[in-house]
Structure formats: structure tokens, C-alpha cells
Length: 384
Ligand code: ADP
Ligand code: DP6
Image (cartoon, rainbow, N blue to C red; front, side, top):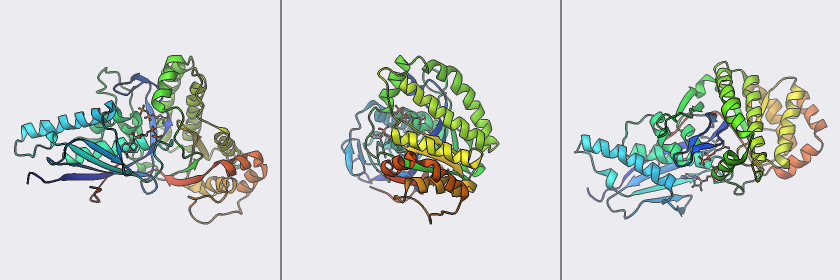
């Protein structure tokens, strides 16, 4: 039927980098100045749900996010639409019996089950879901790797949300970006015991966007070339080894040092960019106190372009890490299970916390308890 609506839906995950992407060598294609590596977080807790539809009855391309119409004229969304339509067109040319979906307007409807543009990687889940849902609609035989090339053009970090588990993004060297792709370092099942607590410090929109911030850093920071050319390449290799060997202490140390290195280049940007605030620094102190009390590294903090802390730990240390954070932060929305209180390590951390506890109690609005998870999942629940 000519008036038929074609549709396909997917969910897609958030990812939080442990080796950060910060800096573009080509802002149009979102080609980075360094490779990066992230952990995909479980969609039971944070997810984007997107339905892509097309119909000859539609009059224009449209994107509705959390109930409100978004501007689709931006170069990033347009690049994703264009690339996906080109791939569909190729299928239609080789098989003329296929419906001409590539020439129909698209209507995309999407919902994030967490705050948008609050430093919780909504753009990563959002563009991964947008690209995956349209690829499903167009029945493209494209692999997650091929789709990562397209999602990258929507938002750099989105390319890593096409995979579950532990995911790398190879910076590549081709000027057209054909080799700047995401790849699986290890599936979630390789190291399924990785957990994360997100301390949501501010759910408000952030001050300096990643896109603007990283461009200013590349242009002005003298620390930046050392990070991009020396520090990150070395740590990318070390991080992949740590993940292969499920070596939490190395994973954690690299994660914390890379977050600090990234935020140091932000401070070294002119004019300086501050993503961390007093509450973020209290979270760093809390993690240091937990590791000190445990006598080994059992927790790792990392911060994206905002003040929220993401703390990674292994399931076996949940009692110590989540237990201590819960005592420090207090009973806020998002903690799972009963609060435990009898652990000696937790008691020690709390006893010595002082002002750290005050800052966390006042500054953390809610928490999200999650862990490593799978990549995008096709669903028959349609939003159109
Ligand atoms: P965040 O820190 O949450 O990633 P950004 O400011 O970097 O914040 O990105 C937010 C932008 O990402 C939104 O304004 C929107 O353009 C895009 N985005 C977020 N969620 C979606 C979605 N579900 N579908 C499409 N685009 C989305
Ligand atoms: C700090 O992917 O949001 O979260 O490519 O301009 O959309 P654009 O930037 P974006 O930047 C993410 C930066 C980061 C680090 C990371 O996720 O690797």
C-alpha cells in the first residue's frame, strides 16, 4: 500500500569512557585526535528507545525527542540521514522490487529514560539509537562497525554505543574517516562483574558543550599534544591488556589517571574550562578514602564533560564501594537493596570523611546503580 507506514525500533545504551575522546582533527566528520575506550552501561538502567518510520504520506523529516520536536537541519543529523539513505538506495538499485524507502521522509520518535544533555551521555545513546533504528527500518546488512562510522558523524562518542561490553574507537588516519571506527575490545560476558555507580551532581544542562570545549582545548592547551600523541596511545594499549586480563587494579588506575589528564587539559584551555566542582572533588576524595581503607584499588572514578562522578568497581566489592558511597551520600533516589552498615572498611571511610560527607550529602541529587551491559537491542515496541 502506498500510504503504509514502515517502522522499526531499537533501544541503545549509554557508554562512559575510561580513556576519553577529547579533541577533533576534523570537526565536520567528528574525526578524533586520539583513540578512546569505554564501558557500555546496562540498558536496564539507562537507555534510549527510538522508533524510525517512513511513509510516502509524511511531508518532511522529523525528530521528536521526549515529546518535543527537534531541529533536524543540523549538519550532524543530516549526515546520518544522508549516509543511511545512500546505503538503502544501493539496496533498492540492486533489487528494484524493494519499496523505495530511501526517497520517503523520515519520522523518528525517541525517548531517553534519563536526563538529556546533563552529562549522562544522552547524545551517545541518542545517535546510536537513531542510526541503528534507521538501519533496521532500511533492512541494511550493515555491521555495528559500519554503523559506527555513521553514528560517529552524529556525535563522536555515539560510535561506541553500537557495541556492548568494552569498546574501543580507533582514531584512524584516513581524511574521509573510513577507518575511524568502533570495535569490540571484549564482550560484556568477558568481564560481567563490572559495576558502576553514577553520582548525579547536577541534572541541569551543562555549561560548555563537549563540541565547543574540545575545539578550544585543541586550539589553546599546551598540555593537549602530549596527551593526544603520547599519554593516550600508551594508555589505550595498557587498558586493552587490563581488560583482557580482567585486571581491575590496572583498569582502575588507568581510568582515574585518564580522567585527571583530560580535566587537566580542560583547566589548561584558554579561557579555562571547569567541568569538576567541589562535589566532584569530594567524590574523588571519597574514592581515594575507600581504596586506602581497603588497602588496594577497588574503585575508580571518572568524569565526562560535567560534574557527575561515575565510579566503577567489581561486584565482589559492592559492599565496600557502594556501601561506603551510600553512607557518605545518604539515602537518595536510586540506591538498590538494603543499606548495609557493619563493614569495617565502610566505617573507617565514614569516620574520616568530614567535609567530604557534607559536600556529597548536599551536592548529590540522585544516584544510578548500574553495570556493564549489551549493545543496541531490536524491539517491537514502537513509538510511532
Ligand atoms: P549529553 O551530555 O547528555 O550527551 P550533549 O549536550 O552532548 O549532552 O548532547 C545532547 C544532545 O544530544 C541533544 O540536544 C540532542 O541533540 C542529542 N540527543 C540526545 N538524546 C537523543 C535521542 N534520544 N535521539 C536523538 N538525539 C538525541
Ligand atoms: C568527555 O561525543 O559528546 O564524554 O563528537 O562533539 O558530539 P561530539 O562530542 P561528544 O564528546 C564526548 C566527550 C567525553 C569523552 C568520551 O565520551 O570519550
